Length: 263
Picture 1 (cartoon, rainbow, N blue to C red):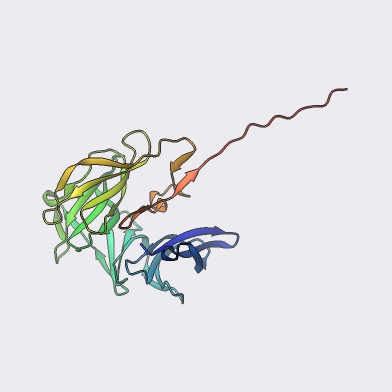
Picture 2 (cartoon, rainbow, N blue to C red):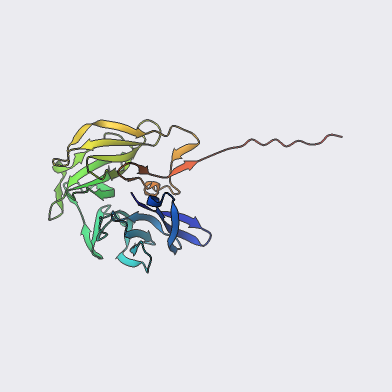
């Protein structure tokens, strides 16, 4: 929770900026500037940033330097391990699986769910103890999105019977673990607005603890949870020990009156 990476639009393109929240700032420094980057994701130790541009995945040191390409023809990054050695990417093709890149080498899908060829995966993140993968799952041809949990084995194979449903809504997206692995936060439109919800998790069994509960409501026409693009990942939901980070869009309006002088 001491550093925050985010993207900002500049006249010459997009820039990744780094804010040092521990200094009471934020104190913002420009880290990378490219033409059309997407979704910067910061490692837990604050030393590595992953990002995406034109179907290429990159990592760069938060201290600066030249970005290193670590995957080609891949989708956007969704997770970086604490030490920056492992990155999860969404796929860039019809397979709709989450891809694992470790030490700069692409190693294929992190969880092959057997018996579920039509189950699409996105927005995946590993639990702090690296035993579980939480992701947003949906069936091909269906608009329903759920938060799902899958156990991780050494061979990457997961039976559909072992996949645990954490949410029962039809529009649940972008799950994020709490630092202690005791709950999962996510975005949901279940009450007619996009809000932040959460559910407790038993980190040993992966089973839900208690019911889903609201964390932060945004039931305002002028202040809504929305990123700069239709892709929900640009909302950037992240969880620290005592706060959440996400993008809020503010809209204001004015009524103008033009008078015509009379003679």
